[in-house]
Image (cartoon, rainbow, N blue to C red; front, side):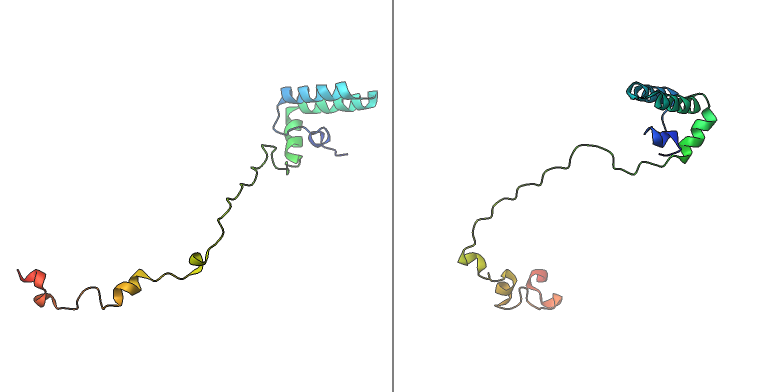
Length: 120
């Protein structure tokens, strides 16, 4: 069992006196014997009646390392079924660029002075 009341009773170190009182009141109601009630009351007094002691104990408490409880992760998305492949899907298609350059260059290699569009 830890020496720190925040850890011992699973209290939030950022909680103020009212929140600590409510949490420890529930612990007292659930306590089974008088020894446990006395320990809870002693820790309650240390945490609520002595602000300096509460800050010291809060700084010495270990931080929460568990991830916050939230909504569960999304279910995986169903993948769409792909249609079966046909032989045409596996055939290599001709390249458009190769088809255009098969007859020669797309633009003639003419100096600007001889260009018929710029003559007029």
